[in-house]
Image (cartoon, rainbow, N blue to C red; front, side):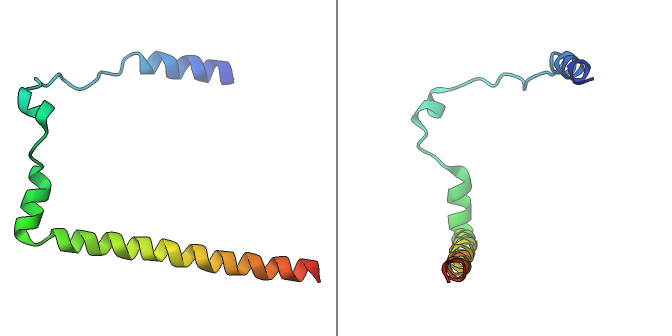
Length: 80
């Protein structure tokens, strides 16, 4: 059964089409403009984005610290 599924998925994957080609210009190689960041900075939204990233990062750090405390407590209980 697994073999037939693999063959079926391989057959379907051969039919997948990639995106159309986009012409690459000299400006693409220089990469001096970041339009999205410029627009967000001019509208003041970049600070909201930075704040959200900071909140998510702080949440991850708090979660890791709490998990470490719980593991340390369990290790103490096992040693006793």
